[in-house]
Length: 443
Ligand SMILES: Nc1ncnc2c1ncn2[C@@H]1O[C@H](COP(=O)(O)OP(=O)(O)OP(=O)(O)O)[C@@H](O)[C@H]1O
Image (cartoon, rainbow, N blue to C red; front, side, top):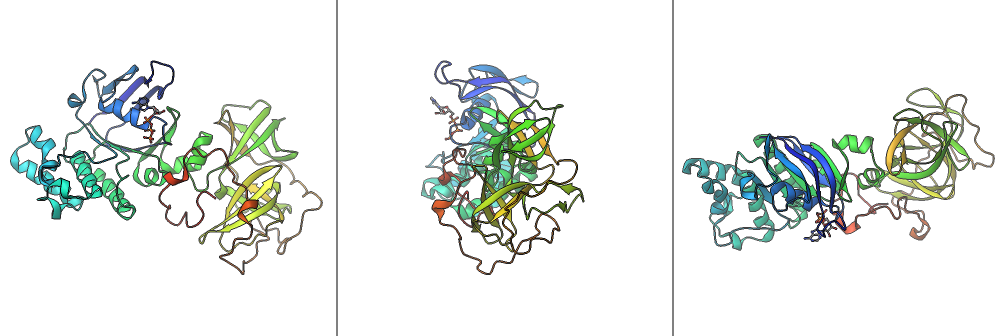
């Protein structure tokens, strides 16, 4: 196995007027399982076809280990590719389809048989080995294609371009874990293209996020979730996506409207004053009653946070989504299913230390650090809710909800936190993330 290295690789289909891929330098390390994740049209298939040799890049060079393959045709690259829709020899049996890549390369008969049967067992194809492949349903045919991609032990990489598109949703989960299992057994380098975050996060050791022909971030799933380096990663990964709120830095303090919400901690020194955007995931927005409270985790005295008015609550079963507005901006907090918040109530949204980030030109430039010194006084006129005054931490003042299962606010009153941001049609986000998307999509 060898690393696949792209050096300054780019591609234009129209002589340089537009770029499906912008110049990128990137190494796919051997033996890893990658997901290449991005919305429709961002260049995923183009990138895959450049790696396999189906497309010659407009610029740049490609290396397999220390061998340059930029001008080497597909057949000479030793890369297996599985496409979105089944491509099989329809007259051949399933067995012969699986055996084809091995026979073609002169593997001994016994080795062919051993490998075909291993892959067939792993993918649940044993009962179909003698069938002509055209007799199978498209889902099963696609599984044969996946098997054919995985059957050779010596491929430099297996490229899978949205391979589960035609597969029944119930089977998808099984197949995805099978692929992971096979990856563990074979150690193939896998690059799995998808526009579905669930597929990417559950499958990959490393997720590479592509947007408009550029890699905007790559990392382990947890890293992408906890420390998004680009606003796009913040809202493309996660459900719902990251809150993004315009703010201003002045004198090192970050303000939303007139409210100081934290200090600007730049990644490379001080951040210059001026506009900035705060990105914070709904999971890291606590709802506080506004009293001067010590942070539950750090013990530090904290400012009450951003004063918001609740506009609606979605009860999702295992969690609630509390929607609110502050200074004309929509935000959402993901809370305990036992919490109670009423539409119309004024509360404070407080961001977990180290989990709210600052973005300029969509790229992360810093972190929102807690304000030093005494906590700010809650503004006058804040509506008192039952339970307030306990002042024990971010969840102080939460009540039990007697009417679980109700939506409290008509949908028309509700605001999407990321209107205009999501680039992916909802229909593309097919699968609920287990325990995660039990209700309204993208709320
Ligand atoms: N053969 C082609 N000729 C001209 N433009 C193309 C061609 N193939 C792709 N494109 C354009 O290049 C860009 C990237 O397309 P590509 O298919 O690589 O994206 P993708 O992320 O794989 O999308 P999808 O998920 O919809 O398959 C798009 O703007 C697309 O319209």
